[in-house]
Length: 161
Image (cartoon, rainbow, N blue to C red):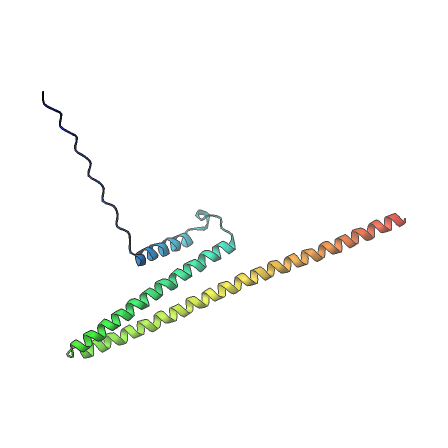
């Protein structure tokens, strides 16, 4: 009597390779942008400070991405300089590319400064919101004191009568 054939073992599924860190940062940034751009009824009901905190995290991620782009640009500039030393015939074209890359670098730095300014404005707005809340609590405290004094005066008048 023949032995039954063994069932074939299933092939193991290949494990997904971990994404490189810059790609992870970009995907997280895209996810945050999508969450911020969702229509308001679809968003989770987040309070204003939490939304501002989310915006600050988004801005910090943008700054990180910009710094990464700046590093890549600098690396590319170094490669261009090496190529310039190796090939003297392409000098004019490489200088033109170098000028364009420097212009792009300046634009990225300007964008970085604008993002830092926006982050500073958000922090100032959070401080103003805190000061407004503090002023409202201070006003409420003094209204309670005035009402307590008025109540004591009314009780004193009724007791006197």
